[in-house]
Amino acid sequence: MSTPTYFWEDFTPGLVKTFGPVKVEREAIIDFARQFDPQPFHLSEEAGRASLFGGLAASGWHTAAMTMRLMCDGFLLDSSSLGSPGLDSLKWHKPVLVGDELTARMTVLNSRPMNSKPHVGLVQTRWETLNQRGEVVMTIESWAMFRRRTPGEPAPVEPAPAAD
Amino acid sequence: MSTPTYFWEDFTPGLVKTFGPVKVEREAIIDFARQFDPQPFHLSEEAGRASLFGGLAASGWHTAAMTMRLMCDGFLLDSSSLGSPGLDSLKWHKPVLVGDELTARMTVLNSRPMNSKPHVGLVQTRWETLNQRGEVVMTIESWAMFRRRTPGEPAPVEPAPAAD
Image 1 (cartoon, each protein chain N blue to C red):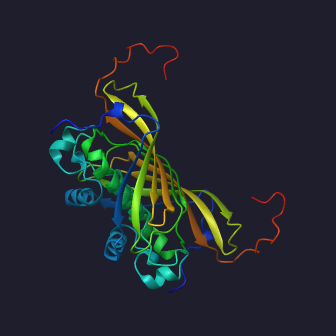
Image 2 (cartoon, rainbow over the protein chains, first blue to last red; image 1 turned 30 degrees about the horizontal axis):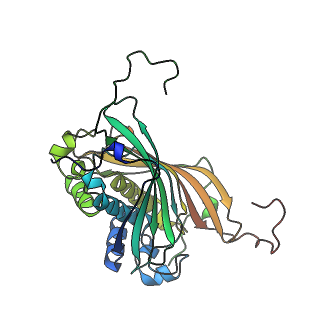
């Protein structure tokens, strides 16, 4: 594996990156829904129109997965990514409908070393997924782990009194 | 569409339901990762073993999607579900590896009418996804909207001083 471009040190608070667009195809909405979220408003135009969404709408999990793919292609696959411990929040603000074009905007909120693993750092980011009208359809606040370009000092065996 | 069994009124705080299991197949992990999260540790055993996960691991988004399917088959498809505004948190606690068997446990935390839509109620639930050893691999706290069996009074045109 070649050396990635982006390590933990590169994700400094305030950094903003934008990725995409990706077009949301009817077949992709239905295929994801059949596998993972077969509620009627994710499977047919008719049920979608009769729902709060007003049309055939992508599963919120599909929107999250499509956004993850934008993040992968945009920077994660060329980074020292080690995975994620989780999300602080995920909001679905507006429906994602057939033919929408999604872009993703990532803002770095916080960054800190991981005390238990001196070669790893944590990065908190906000993800905003926008449609072709510039409307925010989804927001996520997430933590991710990245290998450090320069490992920190190993944590002391006896924790210091004020260590986190 | 026939009348669903579960309406908003049926999700009372304290209710617990368990669904599954579903077996996590190698091909399903790789297929999801190729589409949405093609990081090396989700695509090959070798990269998985070299990662913090210790083996070929399902994308966290795949674990969420598999859990959503358990919820759909368990009760959502026979409910008055109207979708979800989002999650308060999502934590990935442990890796999900090839051959794991996942069950999902749903606990109702809170329930309240939706003031802006008298025919809709909100339900807050905790989802716990467990593997075959009973270890919690993922937790979610989520809000969902359900149609009410008996619609409430319409909200007053002039909001009351202490209304939420």
